[in-house]
Length: 499
Image (cartoon, rainbow, N blue to C red; front, side, top):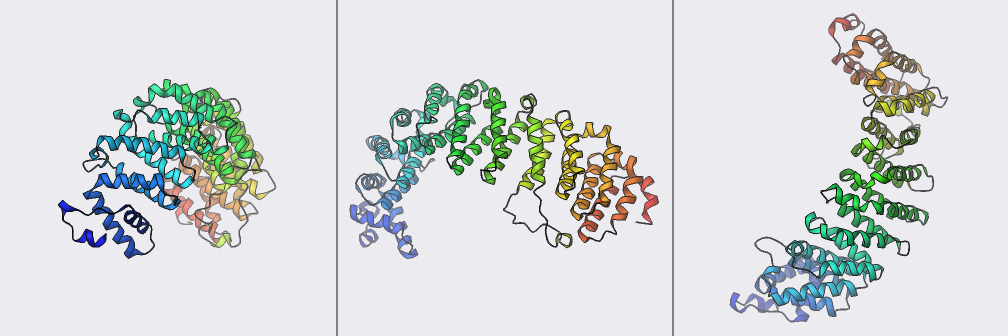
């Protein structure tokens, strides 16, 4: 075929036999660069010269071959060929009869395929083509197929149909989806039922997330509030049956919803927060799942603070959780002589999440909600004989200062005195945290902080420059620089000679 192709003219372009075309497709998967490059050239020539034959040949392999890898490759090639849009789009140029055949055969292939990788590639092909045709009402059979697949198909088809729908929502406008919302809610609720396997239920959660985030009107979003309880039940059962990766995927989908359409959770906020805090505090689930549960709480609080503030005892449950995670900081050899922690940059620890959580929740809900919870708990931590707790108390104070600024300012003198006391702590990490806290307070309450407390803070920091731990000395130097940046020279001048 290659020789015939070389010597053919555009008007008499050579067409491979079906077996020759199968060989070309196999070579497209070859690890041999020469074979693959040659096959790519042949494929491009066929696609350009005879796209109708190409599509028919791909469909023939998909419907007749027993080679799973070959069928999957053909599904990938077909998607790339027919889903392209723009001036050089191939599908609109095909004869109408072939267009209809492609749509019909694709749905039949998805329904019949039993090999997961092949069915997944076919589903991507259906979703890609559907994204270009649905809004123009040129594939009327697609949505009924998806609904029937979710309702009556086997587990594999249910998952595929939900996956196709998730992909479609990325491309179609919500006005096209609105007439289907009632049917979609019923389909999703059915797929979340306990009679289905966990993969199907998680696919339903993903589909709900994909749909809800593209709905522009709140009245359409609230139509799906009834599924929240089923989602929480699905996540709980996923965790209880050791499907933690799928539980993680489901909570990530909820985070996506919380970022753009938090009104989905308005009627069930208390239940949602209770479930997530229960997951976050559980010692039986993986750290990543605990952490994503906290991320969901934060995302929802940030994007729907008005309703979150009204949830009874949410702050009283969430704040201690985040503070407890701060106590997971570990003793490290040579900590005092290194500039930065040598943790793996890709590893997110409970300490990292807890630190960020305190800052975000304080800014989201404000001091009126957070300060009554924070003040007593921080005081308890600062008086704890365990250095990790004292360290956590100081870091928590640093993180909450901006969000609770109005409330803290009333008692700022007492707070500063309490922090300065810990500059003399026996543990180096606590002394470092006290320096850090002073620097943060100086930044959050400037320039009034410098005016009111220079006589207490600057001498104390200057004494810390003689600390035996180099890392503390370096941090103190930075703290002094930050303090001076916002200080009036009139009341810093007396300290300069000694400094």
